[in-house]
Length: 92
Image 1 (tube, rainbow, N blue to C red):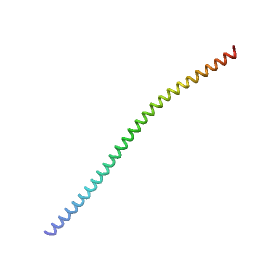
Image 2: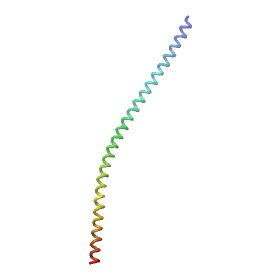
Image 3: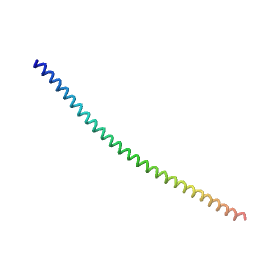
Image 4: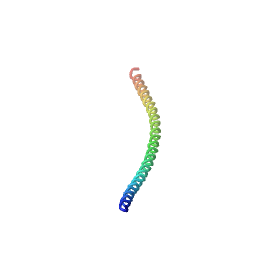
């Protein structure tokens, strides 16, 4: 009977050891998950900042496009006026 009790206790000890190993593994997995969540949050904030910067750049590009469009039109108006004045001088 002492042998069966010893065998039974050794099996219980083995199971407790496995349970302790499993608990350590779970704790490590939780630490990794916490680290990954922190990394995710940092990346999310970085993407948000980049998105805001991109919106600002888009506004500046739109403003610059309008200015360039106006300058382009003024250039063509000046070129047509110059051509007209040269033509008027030649034929008149």
